[in-house]
Length: 258
Image (cartoon, rainbow, N blue to C red; front, side, top):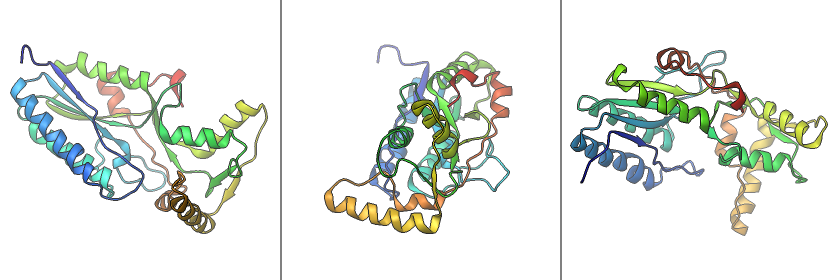
């Protein structure tokens, strides 16, 4: 009311591991985004920055990568909400400048990314499943440290006048990092020796996860592993962020690689 805003960074988003169409996706991720865009039109902001996700893109065929031009075409509820969010941002970009940033999996030095925390707390424990990796352990996504992500966002703000009214960038290093890589590095560092993982093929993993999930429901404490996750065993979400690096003169620091 007294002064408005120059830049709006929209991070708010709902996500869960149920893989169902929770009403909150519509309420927060879609309607909430529209409300904020409407306010930005009134405030005449210098730039609106929308947090999208690389995970909203379908996994690419083997040997290929997703990039800034890849359509947001995954069909689960979170991805659909992100696609609609990107479409709304595109519509409003005729009224004020907008930037879409597709985040890789964001983590901190304290492993404050839920999935990563579950992996490490399991692998570094004495639990019966501490050495189990699904499939061949090749399931892989890209990761980005918060400090590298902050640097990218600030770069967008500093270069705002040079940037087009609408563009999409990818906050990610190139490629991806597999469960097997993370397991081998984490266990070797923690235990001081090489730990051999046990690989569970998909046809064995699926019934095992169903049993664990059913028992978890009965006792009111469901495990992290869900049946829908088995579909993605050994799939790689390889990423090519070369356009982002060249356009913004930004790149992740090797120090902050996962």
